[in-house]
Image (cartoon, rainbow, N blue to C red):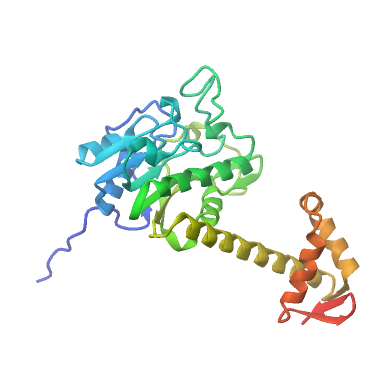
Length: 309
């Protein structure tokens, strides 16, 4: 006779869906995640100490307290800036788990008129960043701050969604993953969105589907110093940049028929991204370096003449 299968408490898989938010936190606080998300995460990872540096209405900490977990909630509206203030120094101890739930860019304005708190926009509010570039940079700082506050072997991460506006799709999760140490990424959990304000809106015909998901990104902190971490991240970024240049040069050279002079190659690359190259006076050096390094892809036929190998 087959015995019924028993399931371990926590997340059953990498896709989660919780239509009900539960009794935790404040339902009027826009962007609140369901408390069941945190409950399932706590059941899975079993932290003894939990920190949320962007606690909002307090959902995560309330869940943690219900489960007997020592929890600390910090937030900008309480005077704590997760970009510029040190989480570890503020709490005074390392966490087993440190999770943030930031604004998704300027999708919802949290401070200032029409927001959740404050009479004026707070300069530290991530929902008031000038553009996505500023948001990406500040979120990297938040996560490095969270990492520092996490014990070696513990976990840190964030709950983040993507945003499409004016025909532009911004994948915040992709940018965040690219900016953090690759060897520490432990899990990417897709969370179905429920009870959004946009659910009540009527949309015309759409070419592409609405965004109905978020990502819970989890990293496991390795036992490395800040110097080793910096060296690793610099090498990873340099590898990405080098790979990007290689593919750009290859794509442009293929578009020129697989054979072109350097001058013609420069002109084609400059025409493709004039605003980017205008800020880098050494980009021609980078093109030549790319051609010379990747002899398996490019061949120097004569002085100033290159072709596909």
